[in-house]
Length: 341
Image (cartoon, rainbow, N blue to C red):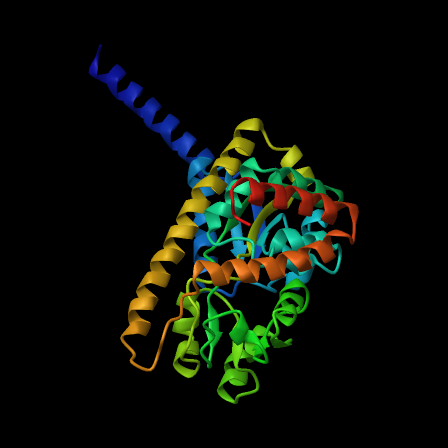
């Protein structure tokens, strides 16, 4: 082959590579997903990484912009916004939609049910949870890609709560709905406050304790410095992370991109759980270095007592709709079969 032909061949290859790179850089799909965290929170950071992973796994064909809570619509309205195409998707806690259907409260955070995120994810993937949740959201024009979860939420407390009995009379912050009602049944005196007011309410003695978020975030916010008896690992709350997309957008995707999105959720599950678990472990070490802080870990017996109280409230919620009853029957059968009740 002559030198000229070699150069021409090399030039042709270079042009071809450049053309392919250009195609890869121009995304076929540009989407906006809203989350339920503020920018900078561990959950927001991990969800941003998920979007970056989708871009890599899809060869640049999908580009997702991740927005913090309230960026486009209030956190309670993302379900309709995704269905209407105002947002292309969301990564959020379904409990926010409880006002639309009580099944969202049960599926989003079945208080007292789970001690570990992989217990919950096992139910979703192999116990019927995915199928029920897909059925719940589809009428809203939304396709459910998959569920993730974080670590059980820690409990912030300015008084020592070593047993269920110790909850009696404790003024504690809890969101309205199932969480509020279960703590009330356990003997506490719940107070509905927005998350933004928790620190001040604890500091001023308006409440004695608070259902808030994971241990690492509470520690970073200084909660444990003013409420010295945190309960960890958490015993009450393990919210679901719903990763969903507009159904028309989903239906219009080629099969390979649908498979990539599903695989990306499986990857996100492990990255999110273990990154938060690592942050929690580091925060626990930091908290233990403070002699004023005592971390309380409930025994298995006390956790079982709380779960039995919670289960009574699940039954009350079960009777509200056909879907809540189906979910209750499915989840309690799963928990019973694995000796988790």
